[in-house]
Length: 380
Image (cartoon, rainbow, N blue to C red; front, side, top):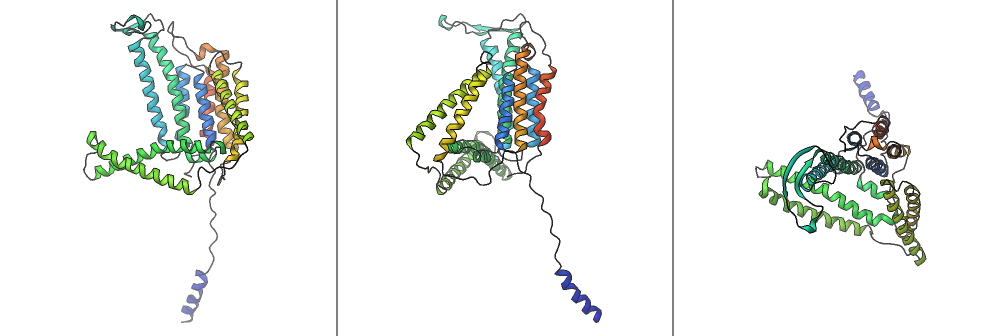
């Protein structure tokens, strides 16, 4: 009996003993979405400086590796595959136009001769059918592959940067425009997810989900859900005071408009100079001046926006590393295009096999730094 009493008395003390606190694992902050856009657009600039298919294929492989290692499972992260299919379609259309409409590139190696359709005299320079040369097809392949690589780089940015977080990082002057863009970007993924969910439900019920009949029976619920989502979004935006602005003096508004418009024109002109061969001299200074004027205009225009940011994304060392890796690739490819244009633009007349230049290829591999230093982020 005493032993039972002692055991019963010891039990409450055992139950009341405080457990040692379990250390909570600190969630690692995610990379700033703007850094992913800088990285992706810089790789796109690098792709525009070369038509070498080996370098372009290496750029595509770099984006695919980084997206596979750093994206999170979410609706927008599946956009990389959609952009890759779009890039393939653009490449095939470019080749089809060359076969059907011809090419101004002369060639000595005839692959096939199609029946040529006679055209009126006012359609000089255009032909339908005729001789298709290997040189013309290779030139179209190089040109289409460059455009396809640009599209894939944009797809990588969409897959890595969450639209809602990117909206929080926009300056106040672009907030309303950013909301419209983000709503447009997130509408398509939700539409695809609703269609997949409804098709799976119809398959479970034994109903047809393919063909015209299945598309019509799935399309109406999808559109109905999109309408309900848009109404709920409009009500939420109105409840949060969206669209309300502060009073700003007229001189400040005029100065903001002049700086923003002049800065955007400078950015467009400088970008055109960077992408073109003839504008390498005036492109960088005009681009820098345009960026400075546009930033000043956006800073002044932000006074009209009455909003605060909840838990803003910091631009930390990892963001500098991600954006710096992309800028380094673009700068080194631009330098290689200026010093050795033959290696980055293989000739097609006469037709020669492209070679992989070593140090430009090593420069492209710098784009892998985000995958090696940034772990896969959790959903936010």
